[in-house]
Length: 50
Ligand SMILES: [Zn+2]
Image (cartoon, rainbow, N blue to C red; front, side, top):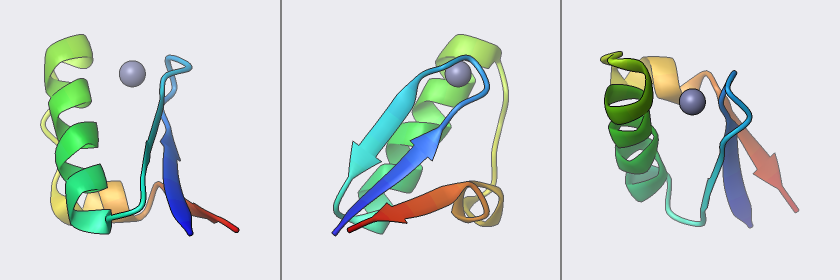
């Protein structure tokens, strides 16, 4: 199963591993939006694709 987070800017971050996905989303948010997200905030955004 792939996990995906769709950012408000249209960027999609996909990863099978949740911990790595969270890390990549946090990096995107920081670099693209100057935004610091907690692990829980990212988890709320995660959708699971079959
Ligand atoms: Zn974004």
